[in-house]
Length: 78
Picture 1 (spheres, one colour):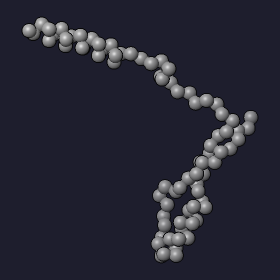
Picture 2 (cartoon, one colour; picture 1 turned 30 degrees about the vertical axis):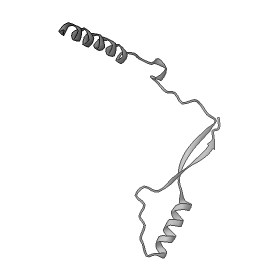
Picture 3 (cartoon, helix red, strand yellow; picture 1 turned 90 degrees about the horizontal axis):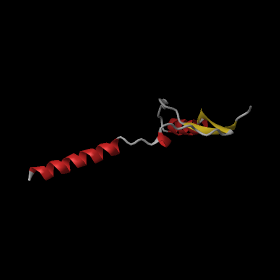
Picture 4 (cartoon, helix red, strand yellow; picture 1 turned 120 degrees about the vertical axis):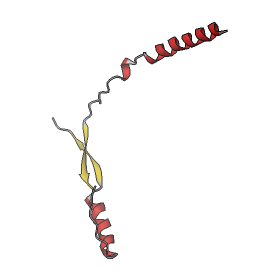
């Protein structure tokens, strides 16, 4: 009775070990495709001004720890 259990456990170990050792070469390294447009990150000063204006009207002092940013697309030059 113990022999079939050992055989099943051994077979399961071999099968699962084989699946764990498989490697997908296509997913090892990601290289971003070259593009003619680059994105730059800038502070969103318009949004910051609106928030600060509303805060001043309510008597609140705003201090930006992480100022809001926006992405601007720029065309790359050669």
